[in-house]
Image 1 (cartoon, rainbow, N blue to C red):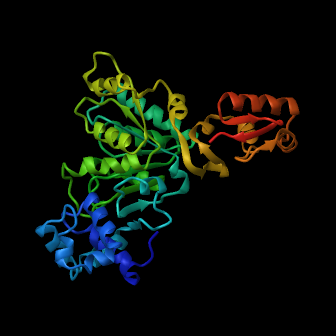
Image 2 (cartoon, helix red, strand yellow):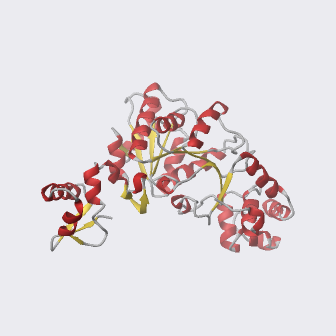
Image 3 (tube, rainbow, N blue to C red):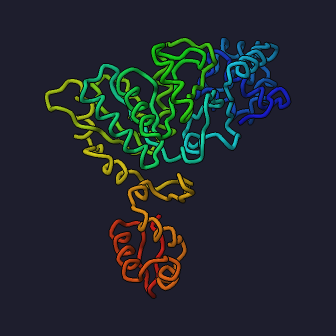
Amino acid sequence: MTPDLEDDPELLAALRLALVEGVGPRIRQSLLARFGGAESVFGAPQTELLDVDGVGPKIAASILAARHSGQAEQELDRCRQLGVKLILRDDPDYPQSLGRICDPPGVLFCRGTLETRDELAVAIVGSRRCTVYGRQQAEKLAGALARAGITIVSGLARGIDAAAHRGALEAGGRTLAVMGTGLSKIYPPEHVELAAGVERQGAVLAEVPLDTAPLPGLFPQRNRIIAGLSLGVVVVEASRNSGAMHTVRHALEQGREVFAVPGRIDSLASEGCHDMIRDGATLVRHVDDILHGLGPLAAPVQSTGDQSVHSARELMLDDQERRILNLVTLDPIHVDEILRDSGIEASRALATLTVLEMRRLVRRLPGSQYCRVT
C-alpha cells in the first residue's frame, strides 16, 4: 500500500488529480500521456492543458485551482481516520489485470486487502430486482467458484450483486466489491454490514473521493473496474436495459470472457442473458462451464496452498492430478523425471498424465517428454 503521500510529491499529485472535478478516466489518461506524470500536469501552463483532448477552459481552470488547494491533504487525513488505504498505479499492490485496461483508475480507495490470488477473479453481476431463482443461482455459483479458489467481484448493489458477495462469504472465499460511491457512503445503506463482511474477506474499492454521493453516471463508469479486475463476467438475470449489460460491454472491450445463466424462456428478467447466449456468450449450467471457459492467465498466480496456477481450469483438478501437473514445466521435461518425483505408482502417474493431456493442460512431445500448455 502507499507510503506517506505527504513525503512524495508525485504520489500526492496523483491523488490531487483524482480529485479534480471533470477529470474522468479518459481525460486523466490523456493528461498523463501528454505530460508524463501527475506532478507535471499541475506544472503545465493553461495553454498546454487546453491542447489536451477533452480539456476545455472549465477543466483547465479546475486543474490550475487545484495546484494550491489543500483538498488532497484533507482527503488523505480522512482516509487515515477511516482506515482507507490508497493504491496508486505504480504500487505493487495495484491489480495487474486492472492496470492493463485502456483507462485504469489512477487511484484506488481501498478498505480491506488485495492479494495476489485475486488475479484469479470472476465477476458475477445482474439485476437489482432479481427473482428467487436468480438470487439462488448467483449464491450457488459464487460459493462454488469461491471454494475452487476464485475471488468473486461484484458491485455491492441490491439483488444479484449482494447474492454473489454473500455466496462467496458463506463459502469462506474472497470477494471484492467495487463501489460507485465514495467509501464513506456505503450504497445502498442497508448493505453496511455486507460491506464489512467483504472487507474482512477481501476488499471494498472505489476510484472516487470518499464523500462522493450515488450519482447515476458513476455506476456505468465503475463497471469497467468490475470487468477489469476479472478473468470473465457471469451475468445472472439481466433485462435488455440492465446496468449489467454495461459491464458486459466493458468485458468485451477488455477481452474478458462473457458467460450468461439462462432463465425461463418467457422471463423478462432474463431477456438480456438469452440475447447474450444467442450472440455467442457461454451458457452456464454449472461452475465447470465457467472454469472451462476462462482463458489462460497472463502470468501464473499463486493460489491457496502455494499452488501455481496457469489456467483457471486447473482449479478443477483433484490432489493427484494437481501434484502431477505441478511437476510439468513450461520447458520440456522427460517422463522419467515426472515418474521419479511423483511419489505414486508409475501406472497411476502415467494415467494421470493422460487425463491431463485430454484436458489440454499438458502436451506430449517427441522423445517421451511433456510440457505445460499455455
